[in-house]
Image (cartoon, rainbow, N blue to C red; front, side, top):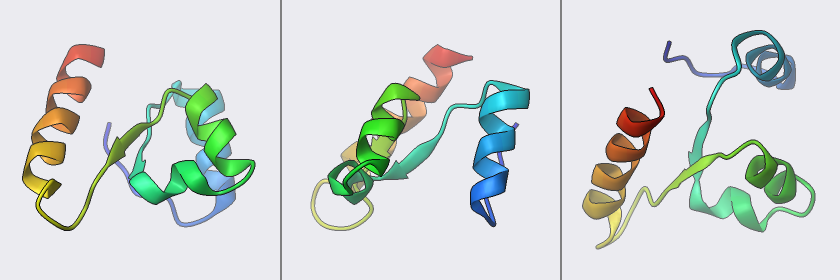
Length: 68
């Protein structure tokens, strides 16, 4: 399943009910508390802009494929 969250509750439901894997912007790792929780949830981080964006997308697709 692929979805986009609209609130914090959506994230909690995704983790608790669906055993979801999350994809987040690279900057999420740097947010105190949130970065630690996203690491514990095995979040996949993506660079959305700049020279590394295309390579980052390819890496994300591969990580998602492996986790299925």
